[in-house]
Every structure is written in C-alpha cells, then in structure tokens.
Length: 369
Image 1 (tube, helix red, strand yellow):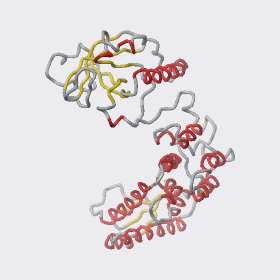
Image 2: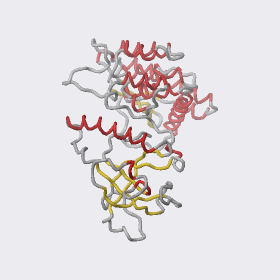
Image 3: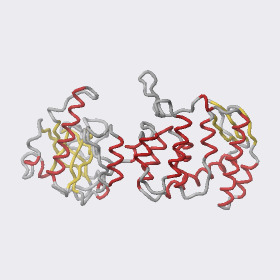
C-alpha cells in the first residue's frame, strides 16, 4: 500500500476538528471546512479511531482551494509538487503516532445522517480522501510503501538505486518499466552489483540481442509508433517444425516435473498429447483432465516464484514481467532464482518465434497470432 500524495482533500475528526485542541495543526490549510460523517469500528471515540464500519463519527472535510487544476494539465504538474510538499510536511506535523490513509466521508445532508442505517457507497455525496488515523489501532498501515516525489517519479533508474540502497521502499509496480525503458548497458550498470546476477545478465543480453532496435532499446523511441510492451520481431520467426520440437520439449519437461511430485497419472496424460498446427477450438472442452494436468505443472512452476530470497528479486521479477506482459519472458530471465530445476528457454523461443500453444482435451494446438 502507498500513500496518496496527490489527493487535494483532508478529513479530520476528534481534537483535529474545527474548535478542537489540535485543530491548529491544520488550520492554515486553504479552503472551507464542511461537516459530515465517517464510519469507524466499535470502541471509536474522540481521537481513538478503530478499523471498521460499526459506528458513525462526526468529521469535517476540506478541499484545498489552491489545488483545482484539471488532471494532466500544465497547472496540474505544478500542483503535484505543491501537494507532495504539503502532505510530506503534514505527515511530519501530525506526528509518528498517526498514519495517513484513504477514508470515506459523507456530507451532513446525506439522507441517512440521523438514521440508524449505513450509508451506501458511491451515493449521497461520498468522497474518499486522505485522513490520519492512530497507527496503534491500524497496524496493517505500519509499513506503507514510499511514493516518489514529482521530480523523481519518471527517473526510474534513480528510484531503483534508492530502493536497492534501502533509502526508499517503493511498491514493486513502480519498476514495471525498469528494463523495457532502458538500454542493455543501463541495465548492466543498475544490476551488475547484485549478488549471483551473472546468469540473469547473460539471458538479458540474449533478449536485447534478439529484440533490441538499432537505438539500443527494446521499444521504438518514436512518437508515431508507441507500444507499451515488447513484441516478437518478424525476423525472429520460426517454422512449424521448429515450433513443434520446442513444444514437445516443454511438455516433456512438465511431465518430469509432475513425476517428481509423484503425480504419475497426470504426467501420463500429458505424454499422450497430440500436437496439431492450428487455432484451438473456441468451445470449452467437456473433459479437462489433460488440461488440468498441464495446469498442475504450471502451478508448481508459479509456486517456485515465491521462493525468491531477496526483496530486490521481487522488484526485478516485476520489471521482467513488464517487458512483454507475459510469463514466458519473465520466467526465462528470472528462472535461475526460482527454487526449481527447470529450463525456461523453450517457451521463450516459442514466444520469440511468434508461436503460442493451448491444450484442449488430448490435443496441443500450436498457432500463430
């Protein structure tokens, strides 16, 4: 979870509300306070808020009068800096015993204001904005991820260095474009000091050799051809005979994987699969025993991704997935870190060669998109 540093509203309650002894902490915020209500857990009273929605608590909201710029406008870019600085300063001012999170608020005019019924989400003027709560009662908010400053949010290499040094702790999704937006040389500079990284860098070099343009990047750098993810290059295409050989090799590996787990019946089902060139049927098969056996092997492989030992490996895992938005490339690059003896190169070569496969009943359909 990450704090929202671009929110333009704040909820207060208890002693931080207008007239309260701690309101001085927020009284210099620009805008008018509006009275309303929030929901909280049993035992909530005054400043002592608890998680839940059992009771209604009187609360006020302020919308910052100096932060009304339309999203993604030139004014918005300036406003982002203002909001980031305001929330950072307010976090310090409110103290270590409070943590900022998103919470729902409803205005006083809501139909249920004086009734013993719960408000309906998304109706009656509900707003979900920032609010401070006691961290003692909200332990699950204790280790929130950091948010990059507006000046740094597009400098992904700087964010990576901050993450690796321990200076910051960002969400893994922050690094989804870490590799695809960099050259191989930039990647080597960022990753070369990580432990046991040589095999990864060798495979990454293979990927760049196979897919990079003459600019050195995996994605085209021109505005007229914009792609979110890397796709196979036409010159890397392989024929159906080569693709069939790779699929057989992949299925054999999965059979061995299942046998290693004592799943001999499932392995035998996969061994008897027939490979056919062509699109898979659109209708769902009535018997899925072979498909289930294949998925069991997939689950074993995916479970191996949870055996990563270092935090940076999970961030790198996200970056590898972000290259193509598929598991073929991710597992090929990261497989040496998994707790499993498996060669992921067959699926990578199939993807690179422009082929896909899908198992239906006892047939493996091998096709191109």
